[in-house]
Length: 147
Image 1 (tube, one colour):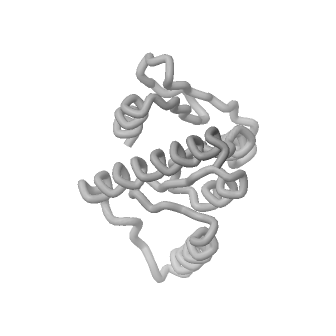
Image 2: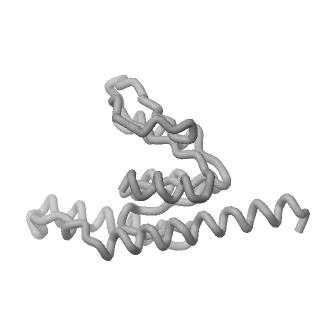
């Protein structure tokens, strides 16, 4: 999924920041940044860093619904790698579904995970990412023109 993000970001001329607990190999482009957050023994240290840095106009790609909710509270956009767009209107249902699925897995009612990532997922992701970038750019243009 990272390669797709890199291609789209290059096309639009936007910066990409990857956040990880350990070093990752990333292309040596001036618009791609890697932020390695040091393990402190705390869970969610990378999520906390993202939430501290994120703001309006930023787009966060994550499967983590709770991280998406936190980013939406900071006026950022959130998108899953499968192309699910999280919004303030939809995040409550997504969190509730996440909790229900966790309970069902814990009870042994569900033993499998999500279906394998496929071409349609990649296509949906790319389409939604393009839509979000265009929406952010329109909002910036409106703001700069004073409308």
